[in-house]
Amino acid sequence: MPVLILSILVGSIIFGMIGIVNAANDSGNQTTECKNYFWFDDATNICAQKQFCGLYMYQGLQTFDSKAQCEKALNESKFVPYQKQNITCEDGCKCVGAVKSCETENGKIMIITAGNSGKIITIEVDKTKANVSVDLEQETENNKTKIKATLSDGKKSEIKIMPNTASETAIAKLGDLGFTVELKEVGKGDNAKPVYELTGNKQGKFLGIFKIIAKVQAQVDAGTGNVKVIKPWWSFLATNI
Image (cartoon, rainbow, N blue to C red; front, side):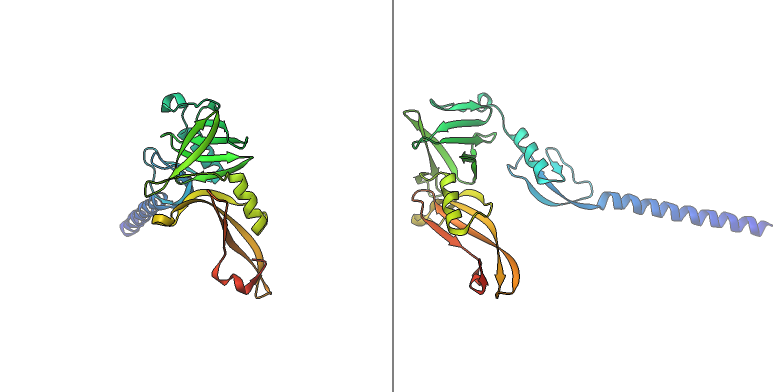
């Protein structure tokens, strides 16, 4: 009888220890589980995706399941009224929050959106929006607006081509691929210049047999409108690319 009681007690202790170990493992899984989220924080102005693991939250970090949710929250949190940014609403422009609508020299309406530091982050004409990764400044004369890019060497270059024209140029060369548009600097030294880089996916056939989708780009000079098409090095082996 004492042997039976002792066996029961030993069994209870063993099962109890197993339960503690399992609970610890479960707790560890909860803190080390990894998942991909779209995110931004106080130091970023874009929505990116990366893997977060464990207790990853910190002050200012916001995470989302979809890019659309992230960008909506980013727009709402990063933009503050012009009055708080000490940004001037130039003559001929209309300003609402962090968004200005100004008439260009050719009569088009350009929508300029700024971040919380006042830096221009998007320009839009005729519903074609370009993300901006160069420093831009705005000039207004006779109620007409022009913008200039400050290049890495300190030189300024006027943006004479608007994003809608750059998009039309790329479509004429490559077809309508639902391009993403970025205004950026390319080249170095005397060859540096601002361009619109338009990126899209184009479907074709590799060796005339296999269906493929390739990333193609058109770089449109923001000063002259000249266009350069960039395709994968192997595109000569594919049709319709």
